[in-house]
Each structure stands twice: as structure tokens, then as C-alpha cells.
Length: 154
Image (cartoon, rainbow, N blue to C red):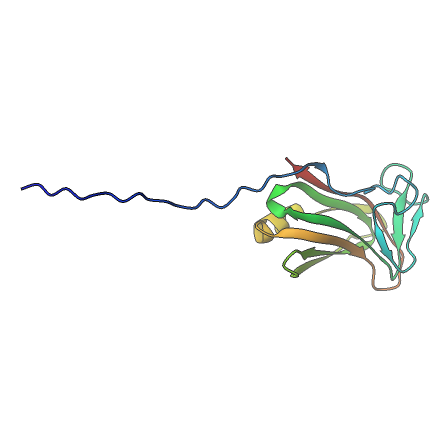
């Protein structure tokens, strides 16, 4: 005796694959306009030409902050998330769900150092979307930031 069962159609849902933007997502990340075009400033940071990582200008912060909206780009869509800093830096990422991640970095001596945020962001927050990137100094000493880059991999 053979039994035949009627098969019901099987439907499943694949979550949408994010469409990743291409190119640089930060406006004026090297401060080469000579001002804070693209950035929102808190306090009185300056764009200066004395201590730079590359190009002609870098940002100087002391009890100041600068930030930009990234418009909800998903962390998984980033090819780079990095910046160069002199002395130390604090970076705060705010995600679209209003959670935050803060990274404090300090180098030894008075020299430029690269801060690569991508490994931690992709390892821990890969499915989240970034609302804003804020860079700030809260101790009252001069720090310098240059070559901020959040590159889409689209």
C-alpha cells in the first residue's frame, strides 16, 4: 500500500539585502575646505593648518565636538570607518535605534595615529544603521583630527 500526501506550497521570507551606497559618506573629512562644511559644530572648534596628517588642514578640538549624519547607512555597508588623530580622540556613533557606541583612543607621544573603527563596528554592530558620527574632546586640551572616512562599499 502506498500513501501519497498532498504537498502544500512552502513560502519563506528572505530579509531585504541592504543596498549599499558607494563612495565617501563623510563630507569634508579632511577639512580641506578650510572650514567645517558638512559638519555640525558644538563649541568653538577650529580648522587649522599647523598640525595636519595630510593635505593642508585638520580640525582642532578642545571641549568641542563636531558631528555628521550618515543618514542610516548600515554598518555592513561600510568599506572603511576610520580617522587620524593627534594625542587622543573620543568618537561616539549613534545608531538609528538611539543606542550608542563610544570609542576612546590615545597614542603615546605627540604624533598622528590611525583609529580603525570598522572591525569593532562590523563585529558587534553589523546589522545596525548609523545615524550620526560625533568626534569630541572633553578634557580641555587641544586634540587634532584629520582624514575622517566612512566609505560605502556599494
